[in-house]
Length: 81
Image (cartoon, one colour):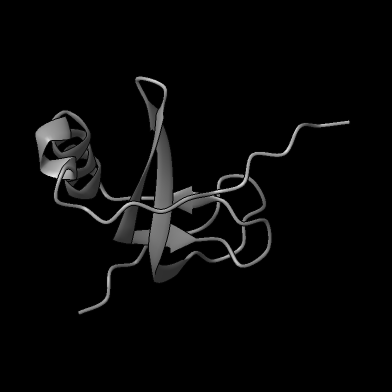
């Protein structure tokens, strides 16, 4: 059964369930978590997660040792003019 994320608190559009990539800056390092279940607004792009997902994200982010086996990506850093 699909979860009903309800409506966007910003623009009132109906949120759509998707698997997203979510980025976090932790201790000066960029961490990207893939396949996060979230409600995404098709109009403004706002994202929400269920409380269980938020708790699991916190557990992952609090355990940097688990990151050591994760693939590493390189990203360009561009300075704003």
